[in-house]
Structures are given as structure tokens and as C-alpha cells.
Length: 91
Image (cartoon, rainbow, N blue to C red):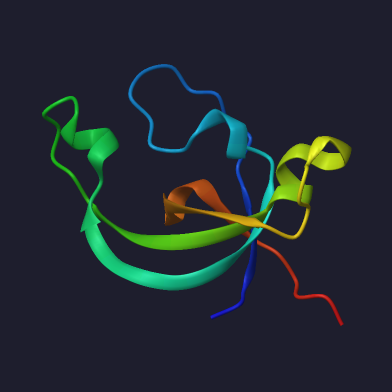
């Protein structure tokens, strides 16, 4: 996959499925995990639309900047498509 994405920096109230420490951060799609009913809607017993779920890889340098002990290490998180902004790939 390898597509660059940014986690939207939204801070909506209620049950959300994007960790706050990843919001606004840039990562790379590692793989698609398929489509699932939106857990943010299910949490409120609402009819849930299907959303694609992706495993996204972030470097420690992206997440923690100069405080990263091992900047090249990664964290992978599963994030639904409506939380992701597609970015142009670097040349």
C-alpha cells in the first residue's frame, strides 16, 4: 500500500475511534483490513454505515519528535477511513 495519510485533527465529543495522540500526525497505510460497521455509530445504537479500516504505520520521530528514543521505530494503529486525509506521496 504505502499511501501517505494524515489523521484528522478533529476533537468531536463522544465515542471516537482515533487515539488523540495520533490526531494531526502523518503515517503510511500498511494495509487495508476490510470494511466494517462504523463503531462510532454502533456505540449509540445508530444505524451504522460500513467504513474501510486501515492499519497505519507511524514513526516514533513523527509522533514524539526530538523526544523519540529510537526515531526509526514504528507504531501501527487501526484507523477508519473517515479519520484519514490522503496526502500526495513524496517524490
